[in-house]
Image (cartoon, rainbow, N blue to C red; front, side, top):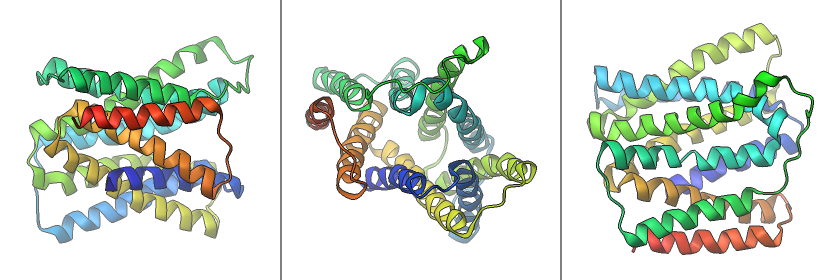
Amino acid sequence: MLQTILGSSFILGVRWSQQRNNNVLTVGIVNYVAGAIASVFWFFISAKGWITPAVLLTGGMNGVCYFCSFLLLIAVVSVKGAANTTIITRLSILLPILYGILVWNERPGACQSIGILLAMASLGLVGNRGANITRPDYPWHFAGFPVLFFLLAGTGRISQDMFKYLCDPEQRQAHLAIAFTIAAVPSTVLLVVRRQWPTVPEWIMGTILGLINVMQVYCLLKALQIYPDYVVFPVTSAAALVFTTLMAVWLLKERLRLTSYAGIGFAVCALGMLFS
């Protein structure tokens, strides 16, 4: 539940920042830098966990996927539009689910399988608000960017799933420190190269989002220690979908279509099936 609220708060924070004409790219860069500072500090004061080759692998994969998918996100949005990009991001949970089934021999029951299908349907219904393609004349090589973005987003989730099986639970802070530091280093370079320094509101929002990001990943790693992949990823995605959508309507005054309400209903049913 906490991971759902934190993950949704991150998305709502980005939307809130967009509505106030902040530079979202700059806010995203500050988010990784703030996340790195906070996670490294937390790692040093926690006196728990240690750095091993396994946690270097999982944290490193997570950090590389974070930064690369962040850059691809910009390109994919320009090609496919925000709505379709959102669907790609959400459907990437299929990769860690399949990975858990094929590699770790996790076997969802009949109810869980139905719940996964309902969760997929709910993500598609709520996210499908039209393509809104802003660049119909994009270069031919852009065609592969959505697929690459899907793979990177899913691989980032797989790295978090790998942590469950390869690392000690007390190494969560080490995983976070490695992941956000690796994402922060090229982000800082990008910030310097662009020479567009954050404004005070962008510093504040980016820092808040960075702290939220660290905590939501921590909660996800903790949830994976308790529940199997095929429960955690659909539940967090479907529950976050419901919470984010309702909060967007209430706080950001967004309007919903009938398909969105149907998607929320599917998500609620999926949650019940996955926990049955």
